[in-house]
Image (tube, rainbow, N blue to C red; front, side):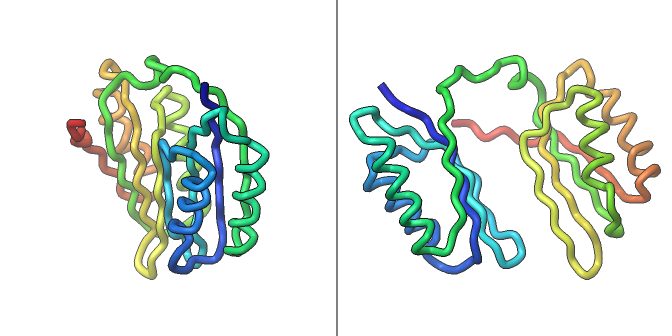
Length: 176
């Protein structure tokens, strides 16, 4: 039997954070199953899904994780989650990448994500960055096949309303 946990860490970026956290998880008997890790400005953020065999102690893991976080200047959140089967309703469709490019202003993420939510397009990943030249956002969505034409027709309207450039293309699916 196993216990599943969602862990999130954030702290000032520096070399060794991934090694320190993954060593603590390994030493505590965890299997790191899914992760997203990235540098945001001068901060480093990690979101992890780990499996802990019930033969190992959750309290010991939590103590180890909190000690590792403190030693590395990280904030940590540990959340117990259930092992649910993948929701096949949200997993069906074509994977698309939407790119938004333009001058930075408040509301770009909100307006774009509100359009996607209104149309029941499932956002699976979002990345944004601000450079001296432009605001850039990459959104990965699962698009129901029946709504593909609608989304492609609506994208220019959303872009015009925001005063940005938006493009969409079907993502390549790696074969695993």
